[in-house]
Length: 212
Image (cartoon, rainbow, N blue to C red):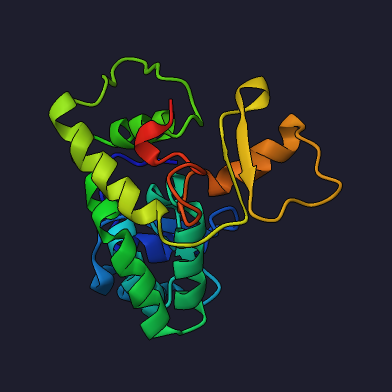
């Protein structure tokens, strides 16, 4: 749970001996802080990054993964980047992370999770509503988030594209399976790839900007 205060590595070390505390989300963005926690708590203590922009470096220092904001908008690319980092593929992870860099920044132009909720709403994954104390994303920031999202979600070709859920879903296939059925469950699974790359031309797949 959130502590609302900083937990210094010395405190984390003491807490790591508690049988019901198995790890920590380290969101300071400090690689040195993460490395010190690992040095004090050992490999059995789970260290997860809570900062998308520095998670690749923290994984390189020994972290086991990330609790991500960016991954809500570009799940496949974020997953591939983390997998590459965990496999010590530094060049591959760096290349993938560079594609995500703009989104890492843009999703924090306002307090999280305001920008990511706006982006997910544009993708058709959630409704447009937002509850206080959060407020809608300021209009001047929409173009920033939109441009970063477009850059990130165009990172990998796909076989299927879909937008929306259930009766409102629109799907197009490059090579549709013979037994494909447009049931809602299947569509939800495929939403991971929604609106990624228009590799078959403007008439085939909607851009991020075109998603209702």
